[in-house]
Image (cartoon, rainbow, N blue to C red; front, top):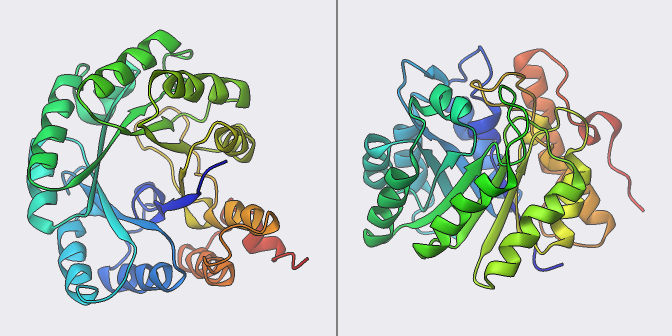
Length: 299
């Protein structure tokens, strides 16, 4: 096990599935709470077509206000997701500190998510452009563990994408379980293949809890040396363009586990639990997370 970092994606992946559009002022309140909880990375939103995803329409404004507010203070890294060249231009103009982009290992999911079935060369070119402009870049393989439409995704297909990233000196790599099909042995196998290929990779995992194996998959990833974990407060989230959309592993559930290992106690669990409860009240529904409902164990 190496160092463990939490990349909170609730403000993006968590909100993109919700029918209610959260007002910008409320989003800023929630971001402030995550900042004060000492989360390592906060994904503010995605630079996508606002007509296609109105929940993300204020992403540019959010970054402008957040960058002003935290300009002279120590704060988490603020990340944003881009899907295409136009989104990348917006992200660069907004001063995003970590630009996240990627391709799907499933052609069907890629068509539904981005409108193209072969985005790899475009993403690599975009990544080089962003790096040349001085931005940190994370590249991902979506649907890396299976697809809601196609079912099994071949290991060879996933590794062929990873090899292209490595050939192009892109070492911040995320494997995303978009459909929630992953199981622990598969997680160990895929991340193990990356570790065999290079010792330069900074590995990230992103698991959805569709079939109840989210935390088990996180544990498997930890054993393989993965350092960055994308989770969402309350377990919110899901890709609108997969067949069965379900939530992420809840940030507070993962952090509760880390605290029981006596790890990352600098990240304030009560504040994230409180945020999950606020978000539950805001949407008027019970969220998938466990700890915010059951309470914190203080051993």
